[in-house]
Image (tube, rainbow, N blue to C red; front, top):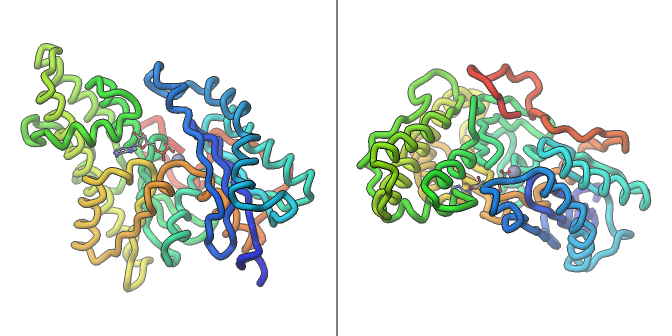
Length: 358
Ligand code: KG4
Ligand code: ZN
């Protein structure tokens, strides 16, 4: 049965951002447990994530979250085949907490240890629920990342595009903040947009029509701010709804344009029945999902989207990436460092512009 059967159990640990998470996943794709503790309430007053608060909170909660994941799965440390923990990229204090805890468990129990790239967790999570075969095209849209990647297999990626400034989720969060819709912004903007007229404000579609598949969103956020100033700073609830709808439509149109370019770039490598996978927290947005479905259909692609519980940060995706690597013998030493930046494609050229997100 090797490392693929129901007897292979991997404990996954995720602490790279503002979720403290642990999960137990079996080699036959059963998620035996997936426990996620969100720190949203601890950060809300600051309108964004405070790294020091995040790291401290991970330290305080991780042991109990791991115990809960094992209990819910009905297993003990002695039943595990390996331990996988996020080793980056992310907020370094938090990454260190999960990585050191994972290494300690592996050392104490003499288990193989796998340091997982958080982005690889997002990239492979779809395979927990879908037969998506390599290679496939991935649109990763989250609070920290916005990338288009050709996923060839564990450890093997070609980046087709990335953001030169904000990530898509970051753009939602910042726009929500200036519209006073609260944090996290994505769900609030989507909700407000439902009552809005997307055509009332003329907002830019950044990068649309430009060659390649890179993204840019900071200009869009600035354009929203300018419209608010033009309205004299005082917004009615209809103004807020119209701006939210306009922003969401503009961002989505930019996403579609960039994704269409990446489809054309990757097509020769994707075979006769190409698949587009969408992952990351922003993939929870219904308007964006529907737009991507239409794009995929028009281009002859199948769209595969993990359920929301696997789209937002979680530890099941880390355990699963660990299983995929374990299967290939890709285990790590206990000297593996934590990394704040860790691109999936180390050969990708920097995006045109500045401040590239890894
Ligand atoms: O993947 P994720 O949980 O964490 C990161 O790795 O960043 O993504 C969180 C991001 C936040 O920026 C949040 O505002 C955004 O996903 N998000 C959404 C929606 N739900 C979450 N953005 C747009 N529409 C949504 N419904
Ligand atoms: Zn993430």
